Image 1: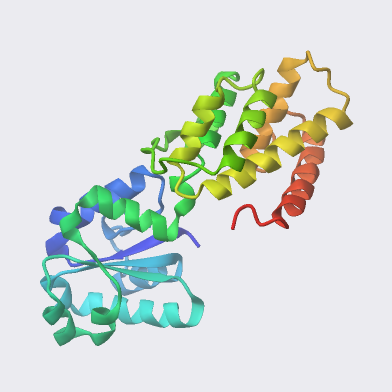
Image 2 (image 1 turned 120 degrees about the vertical axis):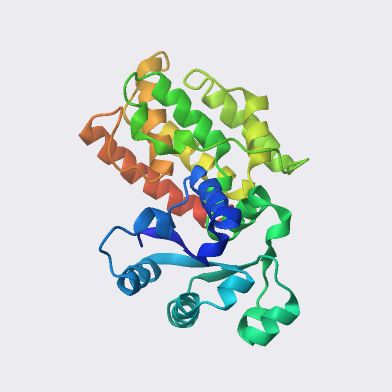
Length: 289
């Protein structure tokens, strides 16, 4: 899939709601098919729409009275209903200045489908959309902090990690389970000499994650892989430079970066095998469920 989201809308709503919402979503790193960005002079409209739908995981419908009167948006809707039924994915409707009666007169399918209202504002809409289709973007704040720290040690390489540009979120959990707090203290101690972040920072970042269980699971995989690699390769406790490289590439692995940035190719291949082993082993305990 090329895009996370295909946006179906009426041109009359572009300036009012569509463009601001797309810009907000893209500021989080979401890949959005939006005609202003994707259509080029000479492109076939129907072919471009088909391509956008086929290569998008989810569909966002900005439903207004103008939308309900458009043939092209009707075509897009039918295409996405077919895709949702046969291939999965989500249709996410947003009602923009329309009522339940308007919807029932046009489409019982849409009237019955849970929808968001544009009245809550662009920023809240973006968060709710991300919660549904890309919850990972609203998580991993401790990992993002570790990425920034790792790349600060290697001048000139930071441009390779686009995750650095994602914005830190607000604290969404007022408390965390005791087992996470206790384990987080151990994790922060293990990485204290390779990561400029303390226990309080670590806990605060977990409290920002919508899915802190997933984040906690990943940190357990990173920590066990870090200790195993250091032990197996007999890396000295005092070799902070080498340990920092191991830590940096492990954090990259957690984001799906499968090319070495700090270690040699051979070392990185060994690290990948250790990471996969620990991921599968810890996964059986259901920490990320």
